[in-house]
Picture: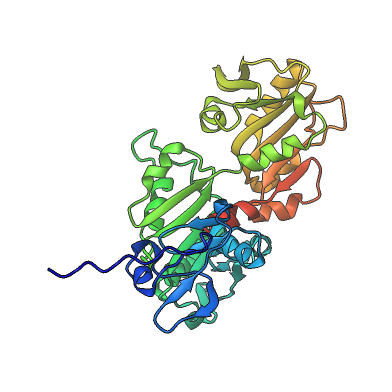
Length: 402
């Protein structure tokens, strides 16, 4: 039987750790070895010196590396690289229609990762669209988005033509940003023969061609009826956002922010928004029928002495909102303001709303906040009291990074 080889003699210096080349390579803990070698090298043996065992906390050991305490510049850089991985922003090519140009520019200003791209909007002599997507080859493999505004049936067809064309250009992914879903109020049939045009538009958008990255992402804000999210098919991924965070930020800036109450003009508005605004005292109004008229009444809550903000998803003629304003003023509201995500205002109905310069809440509003989801309205009411525009640009820019 072969004799067992003698053990190596212990080191005279207990502060030195001797590791042979063989022992390093055979140790799973030290592969690959990242040790500081001493200047003393041998042909068949490498002696690794790790000094100052009195302070073992200065060394961190894991199966892959030995990293020195961040007291040196090298270790600080290594630690930063490990603890703070690089943030990879998704670069997006954003197309837009003529109406949404100003909003598109604000979105691009929010992020260096968003680049604006142009489309030539022309028409033939018969009035049908003659469209051209600039640098179509340049968007291959890119994340692409289109910012739409379906402000009238006349512009929907030309934009749908572009929306259906972009995913076919071998793009990595496609997102449609439609801040205002325009047919949202026509979501149900009350008698045989009614056409639910909200469902029709949802079906059209659900048939957008699939890009190489999969189904289209559809971004819209404060859709009118909650059940409309179920109108969309599997070829589109609806992303339902809200403008209410913009309102909450604005309310915090008011000098009387501690005296705000939120009023909902009907039960539908309460169902839609009350969870987002639950930290404010709540007032709910209701429409009741008296003969042939529908009158707004106070259902619950006390507006007395409060700055009351009426909240709803959209306004058209503004009749219900004005009636709600009168009821709140009659019950002692000190100030009355209003917020809607979508200021549609057909036939310039925004002119019905005047500014309250103090003490007349039954006749005017202190503020009327809208977003820029309806670009044509924004152009008309810009810098016109009591209107203030809260831009969706930052919300859209953040959503495009999903």
